[in-house]
Image (cartoon, rainbow, N blue to C red):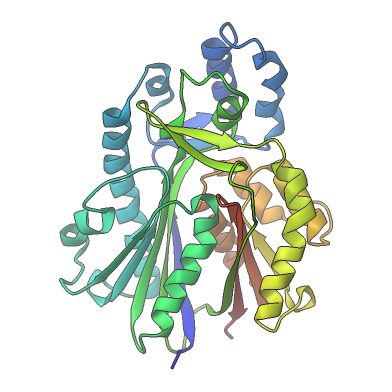
Length: 350
C-alpha cells in the first residue's frame, strides 16, 4: 500500500567560479569568430538569453584550452562531489535530520560519469548508513529534476516511514567544446551552467508539501531534438532549433494528459513551476499552458542569476516559490532528451 509522501526540505548549491554573460560573449567571440563564419549570426544569443551570470566548475580561462575525457571527468568527480555534499548537507539541516536518517538516495546527473557513483564516494564523508539504498540515474537530462523527484517520491511511497534524499547535479560547462564549430555548441556556451539541488522526502505527515502525483510523456520520433553525441573528446551537444515551437505546439496537450491520468486539470493548478530552459522556451511554455506572458517570474529570475543548469534548475525555481509562499497546488514541469516531458504535482501542507 502506498503511503503519503511529503517534501521536507529543498536546498541548492553552486560552484565558486562565476562567468558573467559579457565575459562569456567576449571569450566566445575570441575563440570562435575567426574560425566559424556563422558566429556573427549567433552573437545575439548571448544578449537575448536572459542570463546575467552563471556558475561554472572551472574558471573561464580553463575553457580556453583543449580538454579530453580524463580532464573533464576528473573535474566532474571533484566538483560534483563537492556540490553533492553541500546540497545534501543543507537539505538535511533544513529537514532537521542527519545523513544516518536517510534510507535511500536517488541521484540524477547526465553531464558526467563516475564509478563508483557519487553517493558511494561520499557515503563515509556524509555519514550514510551501510544499508542505504542507492539509485543513481543517468540520461534524463533537463527533465531529471522533475522525473527524478517523481522516482524518489515513488520509492518513498512504498516504504512506510522511510526517508529519501534526492540530489540533482549537473556540470554542463564541462561539455563546452573548442573543436565543435556548430550552432548548438555556440548556443550552449551562451546558455548552460553548473549547479546542484537536493530534496528530502518522507512517507508520512508533516513537511512543506505533499507529492501528490507524477507522470511523463515520451514524444515519438524526437530523438534528434536534444541529447549528447559522444566521441573521443567528450560529450557534444545535440540541440534542435525547433525546440521552442515544438514546446508551444506539443507540451500543453502532453501535460493535460499527465494531469488527467491523475484526476486533475489545468484549472486545479495554482502555479506551474517550470524548468527555465531559455527565454524562448519559457515564452513557449507560457503560451502552450495558457499563462500570461511574463508570469513565470521565478523562472526568469533563476535563469538570469544562474543560467540553465539542466536538471537542478527547476528545483532552484521550487525553492524560490516555497519562499514566496506556495498556492494550494503546484505542478512542476520539465522537458528533456527522449524527447520527453515530466510533471509532478505538489499540494501545500498547512
